[in-house]
Length: 362
Image (cartoon, rainbow, N blue to C red):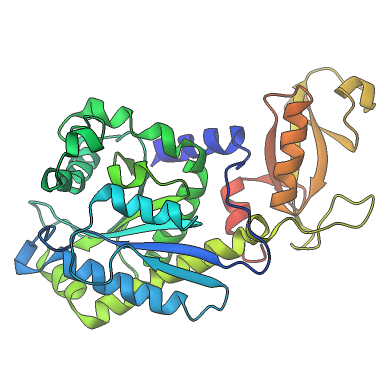
């Protein structure tokens, strides 16, 4: 988890989310739901259950809940028991210009492991994560001409995973946020064991051009958990938590989907969040006290500074609108402050960006 958090903040600092699909206010937020496996590919069959069926039932229930939201559009990679290759699943999401891609699965293990987990694309931190990805990726062996289609990718080779991460790099930070929201919903709504957000090389996530998450809803190989996931109650509850995470994500990032909130002339503070929460762009730190004049900061205005631990930290702008903060960050970087970062505050005390995004008033 420490690896994930570190990777999250590195990506968060240096990405300006420039690749998001911008939408007008009359366009719907599009979610592609991908029930894993299907048809000739049953997935794992722990305790006699069929992963392909459980994943489909949960996905359909997630979609039914999301479709109650008038501004959400749901697309499925499959709605019945058919085989859909991994490349086609991503292609469906890309052609629809989706805002989110959620792939739903069930896990298996030779122990009595249990609990729900979420994954984003990345280098596996341990052998267990690699084994999970290898299991899900092995479906390509059922596809015709898979070697040509997937550029020689070998699910059994750890080295092949390295080539997977590049395409999704622009979306990693958003993928981690939605994965974390779904994971928190599993824990808070259902008291599921928290297997946390992890990274691994899932090929189904490689070819998507939007934030993408693979959800392992639980272990069919665990007798109690398998029975739960195979039940209507379990499927309904898991679907509800996944849908709640998606709706929460959409609420957090609404400004990215409908355009930034316009501010009053001369003001850089949005009314979208309570005033005790705000964001600034940290552009420099120094032991020297530098006058807050634009000519000292490459033409930037609206400057502030703070003395802490013997260092002055210099900030540019202030806003409670996260979308606006990203535009300020980009301007600061374009003006030569390449190491500028977004910093979050509550009541003038620093908090993590993740805590800022998770606060109820955002």
